Image (spheres, rainbow, N blue to C red):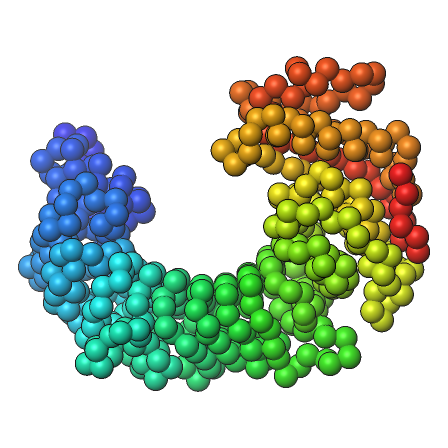
Amino acid sequence: MDRISELPKHILQRILYFLSQEDAVRTSVLSKLWRNIWCTRPNLDFSDNTFKGNKRKFLSVLDTTLQRYCDQEDQGLCLEKFHLRISLDDPYQESVSLLEKWVPRFTTMGVKTFRLSVVSNNVHLDLSSVVFKAEPLKRLRLRSCNLGRDIPDNIPFVRLTQEILDKIISSCPLLTTMSFVDCRDLTSVKLETKLHKNLKRFTFHTTDECSVEIDDIPTLEKIDILGCKVHFHSHEFTNLEYLSLHSVEISSNSIEESDQVLCIDAPNVNYFEYMGNFTPSISFAPTSNKGRWSSNVRFYVQEVEDAQSCLVKLSKQLQALTNSEISLEIIQYSDDNIAHVGEDVLVLQGGGGDYKPVAVEHLKLNCIHVSSLPPFFNCLFCICRPKKITRRWWSTMQGELLIKREQKELIEYFCIIRERGIQDLEDLSIGILDNSRRKWKRLSLRGPISWESALLDVDRICIRLKWRESCESSSKLLEL
């Protein structure tokens, strides 16, 4: 027998504590001694999604494993951390019964950290008896749960009103993570300081009409919201590191009507992602991070008529993020090209036309029609200076001939820019991704390009631009 296997059982259990669930289970084949060590370690991570067997077998193994901790409690066996991911499909009532049996016992079993992730397939279930008794619950994640529509009144939990949400919080004082994704008919969520004393991570994604109110919660480290109205009662977030706002309507008492800018005081922020109508613009107070933090802005052009007003808003948003390393993604949904973007894009409200363009680390072009490039970049280069531009094609969405034509036109367009030169541009190079080798190679721009060989099996093009460090925008559009 090896020396490790000679160690006391409680030490072997502690060793497995530091392994993933998958690796811990693998040790069961080492010998008879190791067969059940993995299921008596201080931490367990069960997921029916990765379990090799049917749902009833999964529930049986889960029940047997938890019972083993109770049976050996007098021997010092203790479950400290338990993470359960479970989908409420058939046999869903058995799943709920198992939760009702064990969750209330976790506190007496010594469980200090409980994480629960529930995925529902439109099953109307009452989980109040589970969640309201889950005192050690630290992370609650609900996905695709029906939270109100056509549900009987005697099922309170799935009708997740603010009152029920508050009760969950008061019943689970250790809760640090709350995540609601695609949970229908939840109309409002209010995060208050008095209830969310330990909340660190909050995620809310919805396609329904809903509002989220956020109070001054100093413990918050991550906010991720998609598809609803968001009202900030406070703009100070001492520990906030991650903020993602997608397709949201933002309001706050601290927004100045004159400039429509929401300034967030988050000295520890390291990542910001924003996709919306850019009203208001979002800026950040100076951070305490030693390195620069990152921001990712997604700009959608759905109609040609939108382009001018949206570019003005985009410019204001980029100006508000100059303290960060900016990535910008531009997505064009309109089938028409952006051919009528006028000079008024440069006349920024409150700023005039003479200002320093914003440095953008990476500009991604998504579904941009090549015919739109000259007028579009004519304006875009006046408001920002991208260091890298990439465009990717998916063959499943477009025919091969169309892809090759667009790739050729894109390269030709930037070759013209390189030859004729534009204001403040010092150098330009073009790289293509060889899809077969998954390797980038630089395209030679000296002499004629052999298009057939150059664009063979290429799905991505990258243009790198070097700008003068001190450059200011011209009041005129750039001309090629």
